[in-house]
Image 1 (spheres, rainbow, N blue to C red):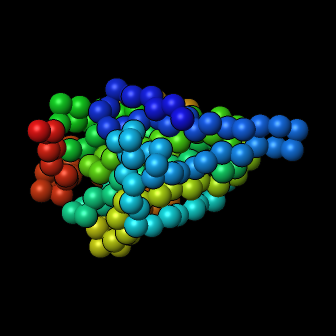
Image 2: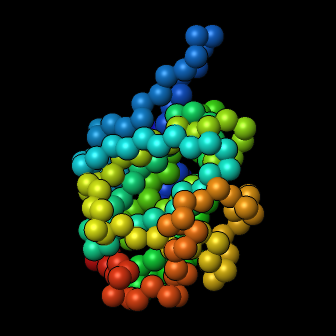
Image 3: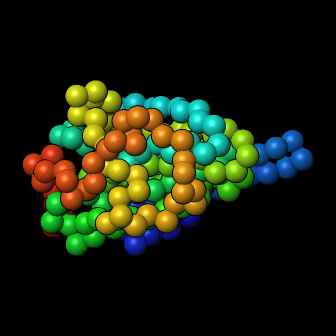
Length: 188
């Protein structure tokens, strides 16, 4: 397993070992014995799977006040996956990281608590998007930030994605009260 640091501390790309042969492939999607020593969570509260057609954008989502970390991967298809630091007081507040995740490359992305998350289905086939969450879903704490917030300037590969009404009407980050955003906690 290869762990690649990104521009956002705590957001990492994981490249599991993939064993390929003429029958297909095998990879380990999570192991406490391997992910723990890489400073990734060893306990998760919930697993989710979404199926989205090409051109769908989901996000940018976060939970507040009960934040969620997510380990995300693609089982079928391809997505452009984005993490945005929304922690008030963080030196990287408002910055984003994007990475292509696909069935072919087998990559995963870990998005820590305190980050907003979204993905856009790229390519010509639907995407099966799997993610492990460090806390359970809280319907009352579900929050969104506008996917094309000009202050964030995310370089999405599609200018007119398919959106839910909620995502299309989400506020810009600057319009979210600081009291509704996570706080940066520097490491000791």
